[in-house]
Length: 372
Image (cartoon, rainbow, N blue to C red; front, side, top):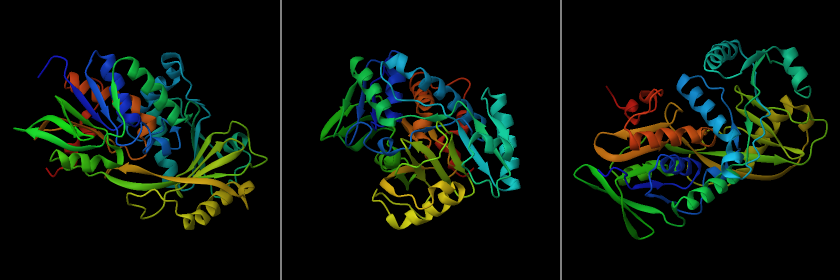
């Protein structure tokens, strides 16, 4: 293999672009990004933009903390704003089991350097007085979490990559991955053959189909997620944290003068992104119960996107022994935007060094799903 390999990154979303960025930062001069549509047009452009560090596993906590530091420096490094607003994330916990889990998680987060803390209902009410505290036993909050604009991040990264000589081939879907004697040699993209020493599968919801092109079975499935934006709502606390209710999966965040609402839809697998308007009453019912000022609110716009779910909801980052040079960077289960900077650094380290010190690679490896 060449000392400075040629790398083809499949997928021009935030994970693919962050991977390309870390590769060129490490001196890898021959990087091509192949995107089936336009950069960020897939899952990244339909994401809520949430960025949090409140995870349950140490590996993800450390990845999230690293990523927050990257996003905090984004404007200074890339000369572009992604409007990262560190308003915090507040989890509303409604069962003793959820409280016990959060207490363990917060202790681990604090040990990893994340400023998370537990709140009692009085503390929650002081922070967001508009919240109905019925059934809420406690909360967990991290003030350095928040939200940003995913497409602004994509635009800033893409400009910087092009200035560094990276070719971002838009409208260039990868239709084949060539493997010779157990090693990747290239891809077919946009009808053209591109040689490659490494292929990084950052295909998001399409990661499983990209894997099949190389003969790699990836347990990644696309799940449809909705975002509903309300008309302006009065009486809400300005700069309030993003609210998450794990028991119902409600997500509620400030969006202009209104609110962005989301909730996991049961059995929403598939590959289309049509809005299911029949799901809206369920979302509004749950949201209005927890935030009474949303009662009767009008929804002005909505969209759906696909998230790439792995079986354990943890990212799949690593290689498989049967196909050398094929690297997975996918399966991030709705956390792709928030974790992309760390994912990109790990992927680049695996390509260039074969290892990433300080990261428990076994928890991310695609091999973890294989029977012992």
